[in-house]
Figure 1 (cartoon, helix red, strand yellow):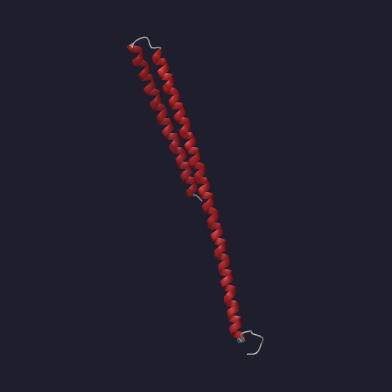
Figure 2 (cartoon, one colour; figure 1 turned 90 degrees about the horizontal axis):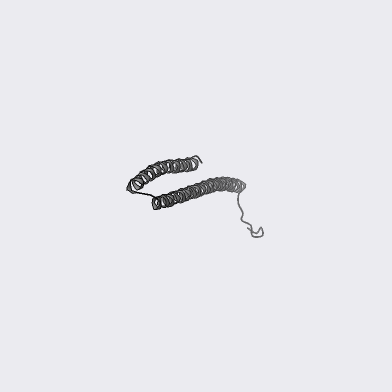
Length: 123
């Protein structure tokens, strides 16, 4: 064993160890590649979900602004009503239009949420 500090190993054992090391390296490389692909898919899903959530938030904000504006318009009309009958008529019109608007808004928010859910599930 005087071969300048190297371990004396039979050729078959060295070949077996080298083959095992090569297989381990190949398996590790495959694992790293799969992990990178999984991270990329996850990142894409997170970005898609964040974008979708941001769009839904912006849509909800636009709806809220529209509803508040409608309320102010209604209040303005009430200020100029001539009698109780006109107030009742204005109120009925306002309630009817707001119910239709809220229904449309709920449907649109549902469609947007469905798109967001469908796009993250497809990745």
